[in-house]
Length: 215
Image (cartoon, rainbow, N blue to C red; front, side, top):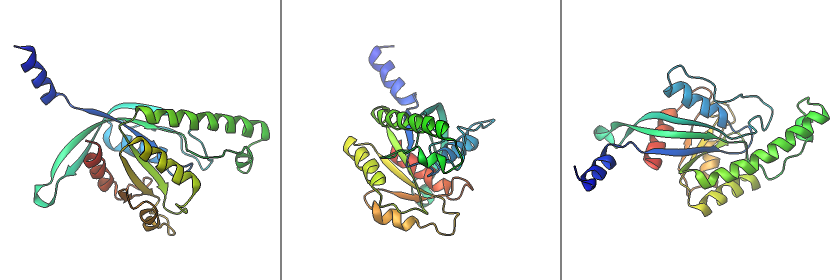
């Protein structure tokens, strides 16, 4: 078999694997979303990371390789099930300022709070570096929060400047004061999918958009 034919066959049968970063501000639900994906598509699912109410609980980027998600693709009766192979990177919450006093408010002693703040700052730097190595981003925003913040605008602008494909997940729609429409109004240039990563609401729509955007 010639090298030309072999190369052609490899391109046909090789399943592309894309590297997707899960980004967003602290406590938006990034790790909850990562855990949801793992438990949905990985046999014997496990927690991607710990989830607590304390901001910056994820302080180092965590990568899980070769996760296959399934979703419907197409329109109407022509929809078919397709698969997308992913490496997922769950990143620390992005923030323009990290103050150790934020941790003290959650009951941490000053020494631990200062240590946490230092780790969180290093985590933000690491998360930004990872942007050079991802093929796309699921950007998680808390639908109960005001989306018009300096942090959110900086995050989106940074990714747009790099030309990274973005899908925005408007998370926590299970809460009564959630307003995904505010996020849509804030970032009309991007697709916004309302979800509850905690309860699994509307996750199929997010998976479909990920397949459409990143495949």
